[in-house]
Image (cartoon, rainbow, N blue to C red; front, top):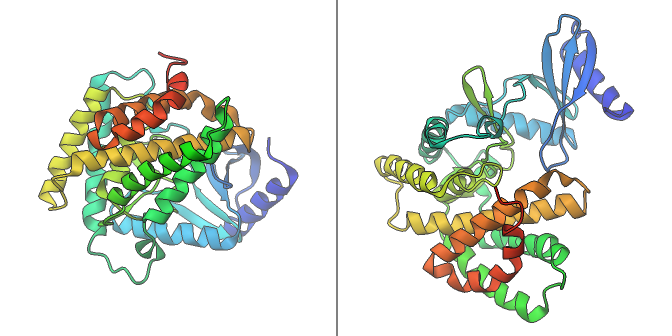
Length: 337
């Protein structure tokens, strides 16, 4: 249900962008884990549009600016109809996320849906490399050690501390921090490409045969493996490990052609997946304990199982596995399919 303040904000935005659009209904849409709110608006002819309400006008203007960059980089993004103050009036992309399409999916379904998405990602990375870096702030913001470790600390606070029966002691957190620092140093050593920053199945809309990326306003420079890890180790879609490996191999074959492949890409994918999954657990903990939104509880077991898998799989992460397994295993063993 939309509150009176947002109702007024949305109506004013539509009246200024599309004066002839007579609103008959405003419907809240399922949003992301941010402060942005989304609404579907209808007129009496049952035509629909979407309205994004952001924190301020600057955030909306930045979203439009980076949307323009994404289109230059051959990413399909929501079509802008107009801006008014803190609102963006957009095309309505419907309700089908990639996550919905993958419910109950078999191996062939994963191949069919993810192969073109990974080709889109490879093209995006290739085209983003030569763009001038002085006019868009996203090119100057890095997934550096400070940012990656901030996310680790966030997860320590909002997942480990809030979910363990006995909060972790200082000695344990110090050893944990040392291992996470080693991992983050490895994946922050270079930042050769622009990253979406949150590319998973809830941020790809499937609409009229299109694969539309959303929620990319926090894009920044990072490793080519980061967005790949976000897609393949996505807790919202419990992808079989064999398919992950197959799709990763196919993606790396595309990056070889673009001269962006590293001999360490497989290892860096595992390291990126570990950091990304732990960051996701921090978000789920924050949403649950701080925002009292319980939607994300169902994804904690999948995230824990996947994190344990990559920590155990990669030799460089075995010490981190030994430290984290006692905390993660109780969650990983719950709600098994």
